[in-house]
Length: 553
Image (spheres, rainbow, N blue to C red):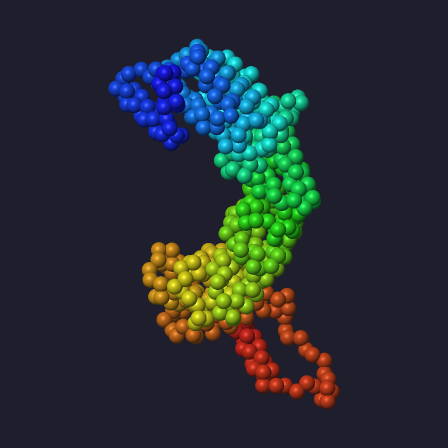
């Protein structure tokens, strides 16, 4: 095999030709293996090996690059042998030690054109020799890994160095636990955090897994390992925010999120100091406009993750803190909220699942969103209407049912709505569905308008399973409650719902059931002159009073 590699390297006119030759050889070896032939080892020593080491460090970039590719070929062949259950040859230790040492000695002075190739070769080699069965033969694997690790600490950070570092730390984590008690452990932990903050999603994700795996080992020795880790991570986020930095937040928030997700619900409250956690959320949500979209979504996703870990009881105990955090969130401009609509909707839905009355802390925010949506409807601006409706759907509940009904009326009675907009149509139907599911209203007049409205939307859009199910649900409610005929003129339903909405709103006022307050007499000269509008308002009030008396009779 050594002679073949030597001929391939020296005979190939360029890099592309060499790759083709070596790839063809790999295919040939694979075909022979399928026929039952044993794969011969490609590891070699001797004169060709010595020439190869010299070539790697030479000034001739093309020759050096060819030999780096050839060594990668050797690693591929040896990996194929390992997968077939074949033993690594005895001289593998000397082979890999010489190559790794030469590459590390050359990296600092190597041409930038081949530095990337050298790091990728180191990754291939360490991924191979740190496999337990291979490491048992390559006795120098520990010494080489430690040398490479120390070299990386003194090198500028790149994606290539991160990949090699991740390979080494993955192996180290299988042989020991990093608890921070030793100076070396602190270095390893810092490097894991560096990798977790990588811009490369795969590297960050794998580093996160290593951190959590190490944390699980620590928990077996010390139950306070997780809360201590969470507390330290929260402090890191808070410090970043106080320093005005947002660049590292996304990865930190991801780490805290998955850590809380791993916690057993109902146990974190006993050990985690929640005061710093709520402070972190306040700062996070205050600075929401400064983040990129991914960081903002991570911030919003973190709150329900923490709440799930704490459990419903602890959430209720801390509801005032959570309410303040939600108020901070909705203090931002509506455009910002709608720009993050999916994450906001998910946050509210998961908090509702955890705490059925969560909507009660959102009354002020609900009115703000509805006012903004009403303004957009008046201006015939539908761009973000679907997003607004989706968020509002998660903020409804019995005590604000009349507000939701008013919004539905606004939408239902608007003849400029574009029901060909699938997202808008679905979000409105979802609003109606959720409104009824929460038992916000079973008044026959309301059910009539909702049924007529849904049928109108279906007539425009065609059949849809979710819409059909909602229509059937409303029909059943009307049958059970003795609802009125639903085939009357649609406009009359809108008028009836308007009346009932006003009645519902007034009946919730503290003085609603009391007699009208008698105004003190004023002199005729001071009595304001009634306009036509005043007379209409008086007539409406009398009608509403009559309706209330009839409903209570």
